[in-house]
Image (tube, rainbow, N blue to C red; front, top):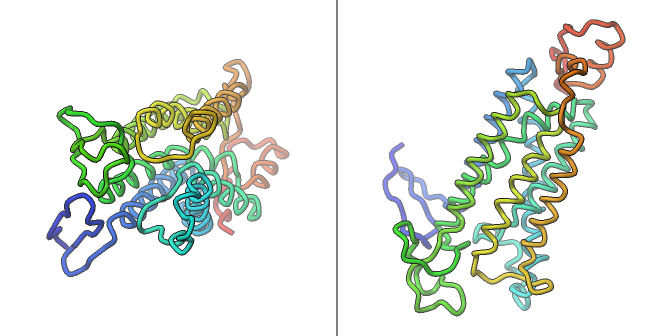
Amino acid sequence: MILSSIPSPGSNTLEIGPLTFNAYGLMIALGVMAAVLLSSKRLEARGGNPEVISAIAMVGVPAGLVGARLYHVLTDWKRFQGQWGDVYKVWEGGLGIPGGMFLGVLAGVWYAKRKGLDVPTLLDVCAPALPLAQAIGRVGNWFNQEIVGGPTDLPWALEIDEAFRPEGFENEPTFHPTFLYEGLWNLALTALLLWVDRTGKLKRGRLIWLYVLGYGIGRLWIEAIRTDEASIVLGLRVNIWLSAALIIAGVIGLAKGRRDPDAESDPELGITESDNQAAEASGDTDAEHTEDADA
């Protein structure tokens, strides 16, 4: 199908051939698809069954959407006073990425443990896919004319319709596209995670903490230049405090994550913990672990 029309920001609709899509939701869906594809390829490269990722996504993605909406509502609850029916209108925007990633990853880990899958390996496999999904999903903010910074006349400034301009800046036509900054930051973070993973310098399961650290740093400086309405705690936007917490958590998580070059290498990665334990018990570090891993 051929892209027949590209809407101006704010229209939130996208026509592809005879079909019309909610642009915000479409970008989120594309981000999820890209994350599943990347994770599946990475797991397959490790000798695992790529279908495992799709099974995890069936649990993690819905949980992530719920977590993202809950985070947005809880941190901006004043917006919904008297309009609580709008809580369910996720297609109009308003998804808090921190809440989505937390609950989505938590649900994925729960599912993996329940099925006896190798959680550290899966975390390493999926870590680079998380910022990739975020980067693609951020394009949806362009359609909604949301997530912008202060006024600017830089060449890449985004023109915002008056109805969508932040309060107090109604007479300013162009703004910093902070959603674009975050999207580019997340693409760079994806590349960094892939590179670090190839170096083999981190222990299994620790790559996710580099994602937490990298996302926290990026969100911190981006949040500092945003001008859209947000809940304030002790004089700072709530997401600034959260970003600081993510940075601290990422540093702590990585503190013991560097692999000792003098230590023996990890056994060949498998899909299930039971497979790893069986291989270690037999002394066969070259055993195949992945044939019957899919639950």
